[in-house]
Amino acid sequence: MTPTPEPLLSVRDLRVSFGPVEAVRGLSFDVHEGEVLAVVGESGAGKSLTARALLGMPPREATVTGSVRTGPYELVGAPRSVRAALWGHRLALVPQDALSALSPVHPVADQLAAAVRSVDRVSRKAARARAVAALEEVGIAAAQARSYPHEFSGGMRQRAVIAMAMLHSPALVVADEPTTAQDPQTQRQVLGLLADRTEAAGAALVLVTHDLATVREHADRMLVMYAGRLAEEGPVDRVFARPRAPYTAGLLSSSLPREYAEEPSGPGDRLHRRERRLPSIPGTPPDPADLPPGCAFAPRCPLAEAPRCHTESPEPQTHDGHSVACHRWRELPTEPADLFLESA
Image (cartoon, rainbow, N blue to C red; front, side):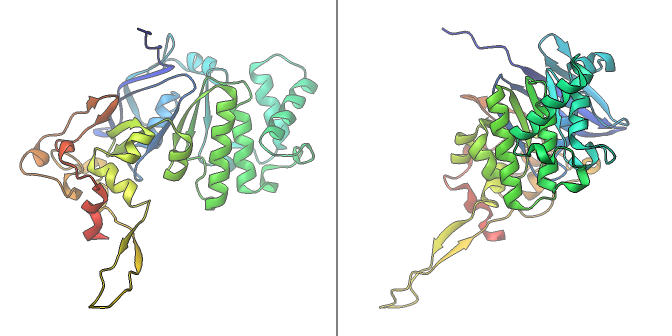
C-alpha cells in the first residue's frame, strides 16, 4: 500500500476570535502539494479570516488558536521573524485589493524588482530583468512595466500581484478573493491565470472565491464554510454532483439555474415552454456575535428538525474522503435544489 504523503499545510482546530466573539470556529483541513483547494461560502462565513490566519497575517486585534503547520513550522503563535522567513519561498499571498497592495509612487516593475532583492541577493539589473519577465508571464508587456499602478486597469493590477506572488516559486499560494470589484469576464480571466500559473509552478493554491464556475473548472477540492465552521468538504466533482449538506445544496443551486418544463394548459396544447428557475436560500447568515443554538444553519434550513438541529451543533463526519457537518445529511433528496425552489 502506498503511504499517504504528508500534507503541505495542516490545519487543526483553527479559531479566530475578537474578544468573546469567535469568527472562525474549529476549522480543520489539509492541503497537499500541487492541490487547488477552493474555500467558498456567503459573505461573513470567515473565509478571508481563515486565509489570513493560514499565512500568520490575521488582523492585529484578533486572537488565533489551534494549529497551522507547514513542514516543521508552526505558524500560530510564531514570531514574525519565523513567518517572514517563509513568505516568498514557501508561502505567498494574492490579496483582495491589488491597488492597496501596490505602492502608488513607484513603477510596477520597480516594486517587483524590490521584492526579488528582498529575498535573493542579486544585482539591481538582474532583479529588474526577473521582474519584467514575471510580468510578461502574466500578459503584461515589457513596455508597460515602467507604468504606475494607477495607469493599469484593475485586471492588470491583479495580474501584477499574481506575478509578485510567484516571483520566488512558493510552495503554497493563498488567494483571498482576488477578483473583488472586477467585471465577470475579468474575474474569470484572472482566476484562470492564477490557477494556470500555480499549476505551472507546481504550487498548491488555496483560493477564496464566490465564483463557483471557476471552482468547478480549476479546483481539486472545495471547503464550504458557514458561520465560521466547515459545512462540507470534498472533491469538487463529488460535491457538485451530490452535495451532502443542505447549505452546500442551496449555495450551488442558487448559482447554477435549472430548467423546468411547463405543463400543457389543456387538451391539444403542445406548448412546452421552459423557464429557468433560480432557487435561493431564505434568510441571511447569522451575526457571529449572536449565533443561534444548535446548528447555525438551522433557522434557514428546510430539513431542520426539532429539537436536535436547534440544540446540538453537528460535528463533521467523514465518509470516503467527503466531510459534512449536518445531522440529516443522509436524508438530502436526490435533487437537493428542490429544497429551496419554494423560496425562489
